[in-house]
Length: 149
Image 1 (cartoon, rainbow, N blue to C red):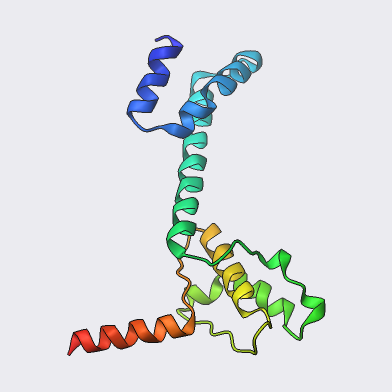
Image 2: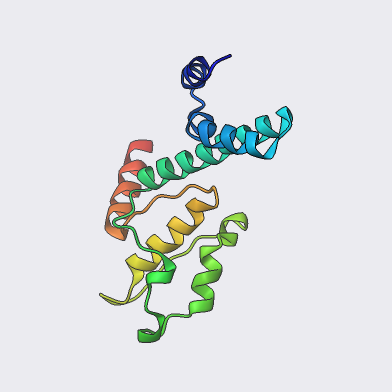
């Protein structure tokens, strides 16, 4: 099968990761004299990585984070925030334990930044998240409660 029909078949099957990696991978495989199963394995890995990246992009969109902020961007030196605790939360282990995190503090203390950073970090590990500010969350819970009556 020639290159054109192969790429067309990949597009038709929605194998976008394979399609994007195909030319470079085949060139590399020919130079290195890969076995056919090695080429197929590399193409499958490219597809897996593309699907994971696409899933993370989608989850970031539906999480409705107010802005893109990460733990690395937070200035821990200027606040009493426990950096070790925040980094632990960013690993998402609290989700496995079915725990919640509530950030409390005055205006400008970094609650939104940290909530966003923790959420984004968890999403990158394959979890799902959703950002709410307290007022919107309370209003939504009250509306759901009234609807259930």
